[in-house]
Length: 299
Length: 211
Image 1 (cartoon, rainbow over the protein chains, first blue to last red):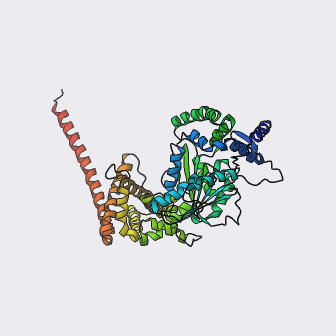
Image 2 (cartoon, helix red, strand yellow):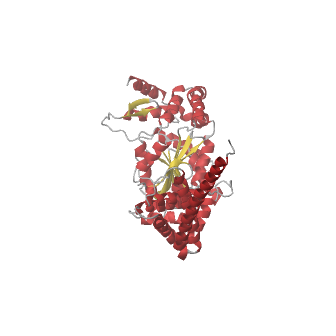
Image 3 (spheres, one colour):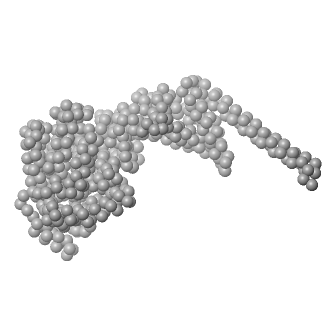
């Protein structure tokens, strides 16, 4: 508990006014809860996680893209392209997409570009949702440089992934729900999945891209060395912040394994592929499981 | 049962109308215990069962599994009855069966040009279920020879059924009879060969050649 209090103070101390990115978590309950959750490798009270993770993202927000490049050696761009190619937005006509934790808009931009370039589809639209207004501003700024700015094809909405307001996000609305490198930062993955299930239309697809467990033991050893030695060092060099990058590495290790996460998706009410990796399976590993795409269908 | 399995189960009755297609999978949700109003969209079929022909392979494999599972309910029957029961299961979808087997035999990567493993596994599985249903509990090499023989007979009968559905049962019976005769001939030949060898050994021994 002492350790978590120290981190909490450190997180608050690190808070910056700009580029603040919050964790998607349930709204604060005034009555304090005794249930705990994980924050990296540490166990903390559930109500503390939001502020702790917020501290981390406050710290790295200004170099968010650099952070992703550093953690994946730039490969996250290929993974995101792969993610969108798999979903093929626009292939069967215009669809409504919700991209959660997508503040910077890189997934939304890829969705719209893919639909336009491959299928001449200019009707597919994306609602970009993030709990952090500053990240949304960053995404909005990025979209101003594109043809989609000020069109019905894109909208930015500030909301919590675990409790999206019914009036702004009615049930059975979207054809595709995407969340990329965001779900491991929510306090309750189950609640976020439940909301995803609610807002999707019957027949809609849930798709999640996230860092996951490396399945090859040799690659796993190399990856562990890189994660725990190089990434925190990169954090020190690129952002002057070792602790935050350490948390990001730890949070990846704490994220459920591929089959466990598939089970959570299934428990939320989604139909999933077979309990195996690959085409027709519930998940598809990228680069030996460093990242992974999970999909589910609201039947 | 998982939702995916429920959809697969619900798609079996649709095969006779839509074939082993993604369309059958898509429409299966309309006949679930809690039926939906719209067929599954294409991206959803891909997410659950795989891209392109992978989804069709999943449907064919599930349908073949179901056929073997139904043989298990017929315990206490003869091998011929078990195999004929399996041929009955084919009847509603006979028109699509050759295409389904062709798809299973098509390699996913182009190498080898013809993949016979699915056909061997299918025939072997049917033979094994028939032996189980008939209570045949052989051990040792005869376990393999019995199943290999029945697998070959069933494959021939199934191929015959695709071309001439009306005479499949008679063809199966004739093959089983022939196999039984052949087995008798083989057994007699083996006995005769042993007799000849022993006779020659006795002759040589009595001639005093090795004294």
